[in-house]
Image (cartoon, rainbow, N blue to C red; front, side):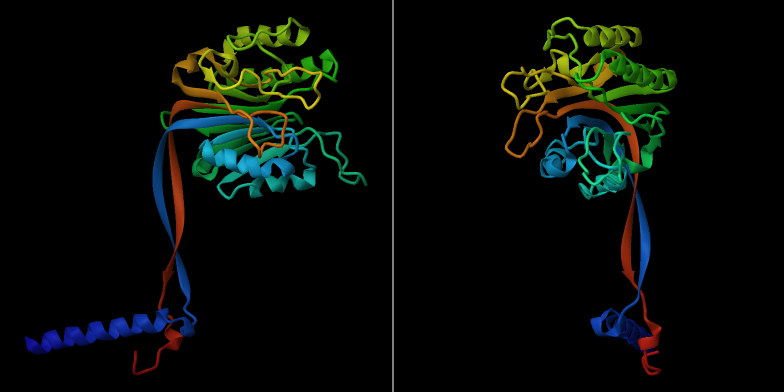
Length: 317
């Protein structure tokens, strides 16, 4: 019996010595990768919309905002990127990836590369396995699908509608394009529209002067049974989202998160984030947290040490 115990001790000592030999930095240890899969159930999604007015200059504040507000999905308006710069969206924050479209009038070969327009969607990598990008033919709309645990689906659209320096006909055309997408998805998806609509909407926090843009948008909202969370009484923060640099223009609430009225019971909070020193844009971000049932699949790569047999002598083997 004693000899067996001695033999076990010897075997254990040999194994330990082999491991130390292989883990020693001087041995040029080879490594293997192991995938660890975990499941994370998210019961809430925090959505945001922000007109950055040039994403290159606003990135420091955007990163702070995404982190501090625990944003899951963010609609971006006016990133001002050219087509060959869209990869920048995936380098803004290590926890986020995204898709975007550029203003179709931008010429990548132009000597004077001053960007304009554009829209994008960023989402946290935690939910990446649940996200599927939607293909659109618009330079003002991007979208994603999100599969929920209970077989329901979300369709989230990020939009940047034409500003007031465009004709009403141009605005009308873009709005019709947006709601054509809504009608395509509304029967099987819960559709959420976020972005700078360049239009005020009547609500508890906003009483705009009657105009063609507001009347046209509100007519479609009635038909689709949608409302803006940023103009509702339950929204906190400033009652405006656009603070023009020019002193002779008034502040307006033109950045919106539109949801169906049936989804309102799932809204936990809605807020306009006030001004901060880091915010270089003349727009304020808006956020809303909604209850949901999302199952995320997380895969983590772990480095595992392995035996480097070429470093072992015959005596050690």
